[in-house]
Length: 113
Length: 114
Image (cartoon, rainbow over all chains, first blue to last red; front, side, top):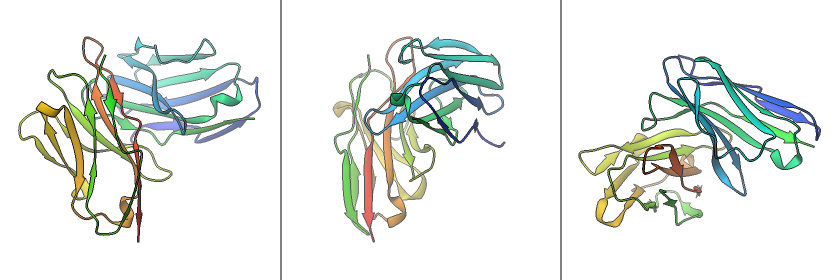
């Protein structure tokens, strides 16, 4: 298996633009997680899905952030409009269950100017 | 709700020194415990985990961790570090209750000087 795939790997955009991050989990994994990592706040769970259904989105910072999982092999995290404080590395991870090992993707490094 | 505390935020060691990174959690029920590692510029990957059985868990690259239930601790150890162990180390524990998402510590940055 190729592991968790994320795209793009790097994104530079201007404030106010829409940003869409994509994730393909490992085939067969029922859980998908979106994390944000910054120097100041460390690793934060934004939202996670089970069988394509959002279970906990309490970590989503505000309404500018939204996430979808239209099918078992694809998820998106959208920021609209983006702001400089959204600059971070965004990781997607997947697992067989909430308790099992999470497999992380390579991350998307987002810079909002 | 569960909380995870990593006491050492930054650790600097010389090669061959011994390492111990602290991790304490707040919930005393049945726990699964994880240590993840993030090498510079890379994504997080599992270092080791404890689910049940022997409280001394062996992981990759010579790392081990000991689950001490009475102390709510899961400290990470390595007897002799190498320069290649320079990385960020994260402890994680599932939340208590119905929502079992992982709760992450803030991480410990380890720098090993050659």
